[in-house]
Length: 428
Image 1 (tube, rainbow, N blue to C red):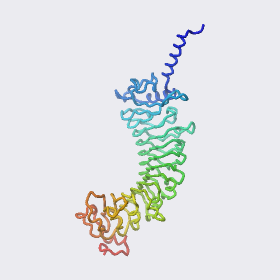
Image 2 (cartoon, rainbow, N blue to C red):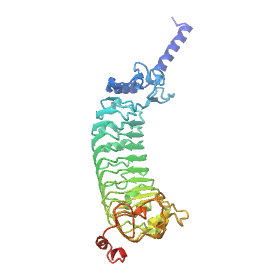
Image 3 (cartoon, helix red, strand yellow):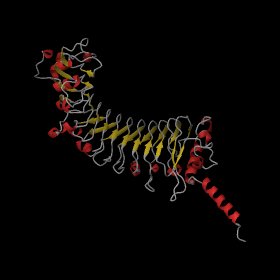
Image 4 (cartoon, helix red, strand yellow):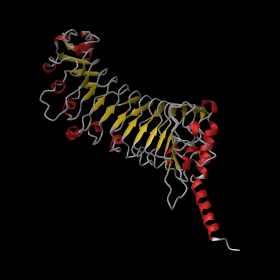
């Protein structure tokens, strides 16, 4: 017998309610269950987001209600994809603990320990952001986290502040949508892998590890890169101008505290986008190369840090004519000769036109000779950060000039060895 009209509408209503309840992809529900099972129940504070989660109910359908009060973000349904997908899980700051979290998004500042999972099975497949920052995760980064198929839409990966070791897996290049990669403050070692295929990568953070080998050559970092911070590693070899030229969008390059050798390439000062360059505390030598054809005149550099290396010769005069340069760190090198007049004018803020003044000029610990340039004699403490201590300068009394405070000027015999043929009262 055919169902009555009221019975038919009741059936439609029941079906509609059932579909509304089954809003979340079963794969994502299983991923959330895996994560919750890995968290120690005793570490879940009363009133925290996780304490409200009731996985007997549909997560996305219950989000921001009494059973999933917070900590969960889902995609919007569409006719083509009626099931909603988990795109972010934010549970930071509640001090949950347990095994390495198996596939949620933001799990920073907790007490997770142990290895990362060797399989992506528990990661929601539509995850856009994965953050396990500042935990105690150890062991290698499993290459299986980065499957070639199906391609992952992951855009942000944060594993910083853990105890991860071993190499950065080359399979990471399969994350073609990745824009932010943060691996700093771990124990990672080995060379930087080929990240050229990650064509949308904008920010690379891998400072304070034990990475070795050269700075990646042309094509091994994507041209899209805006910032590369690799300070505090063991990178060696020379920094090639071709490597910089292959990164036309690069604005920040921080390679301080490595073991780079060779000279400072002129390409760094002719780069079309570079704003901050930090090569301090390496083993750089030779002289600072001046870019050809006055290309420094269009430089966008605001800060250059080359301190604590082995760079010699005269101070690079063209620094005084780079229009946006405001911070210059050249301390602890082997520079000789006099302080260029343009340096003195820039730090004193005189005759600049459209040029930025030098707010920071660090020249201590070199072998500079001659008198204090007259534009600097009237500098007041607080007007700029300037250091000229531990040089070979004539009359640099610390009680008169704040920028002479610190170590005294070097002995005359030491100064003669680094300034042969130079005549200066301090060297006589």
